[in-house]
Image 1: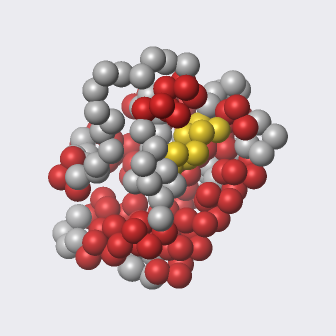
Image 2: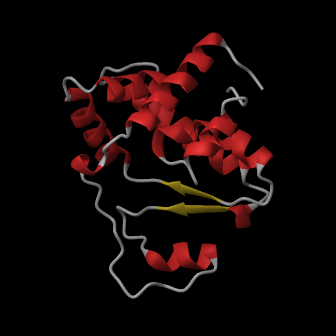
Image 3: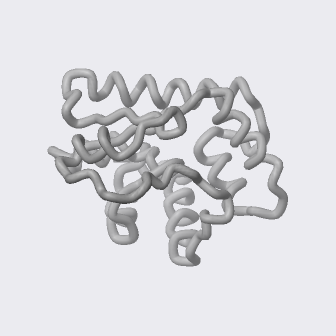
Length: 161
């Protein structure tokens, strides 16, 4: 995927999650010694979340994100499942010879502070692990929306690295 857009992401983010993680290979090349966390979950539960996301009306950014990430804004279970599996397979294969640089977490399956803190060499906090994602927690800033649209325009124009 395009790499020239990554410095722009650097200016607005300390890290990338979810759909923004499309540039993980570029980030790995650019920031040697960085470590990555791949979150996984039961596919059927993930598809249920995607079905609810795809059913939302009027959220233009969410639609753009799905089109950019999955090649469709519609709920197409087999297509979504294939993209999910390919991403997980590609990340695991990429880090196969560098297991110390990749942590795979199944937060919905019960992973909490311990593996994360061990991976980051940090003490385990004395507070509950924040493991629930609420749809109303995803509030997009105008600056971030503009940056995403610019990155998508570059991708559509074929900016390559």
